[in-house]
Figure (cartoon, rainbow, N blue to C red):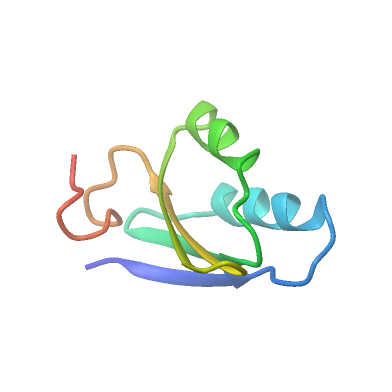
Length: 85
């Protein structure tokens, strides 16, 4: 069973959202993932996640509400249901 940390960065100015999420994922333990809540889609984040060995799943809840799940690649316990590797 996974544990989820919620990181709400809505309203923060760049580059603070990016810095905060990179800090958060650096300390993920096995079975943990981060749910980032942002007011826009963080497109610059995705290649950085891939390079660092993380998977993500992004969902636009509305025009100004985006949620991105982030977990370490290969961590089946942290992956969302149905996305285990």
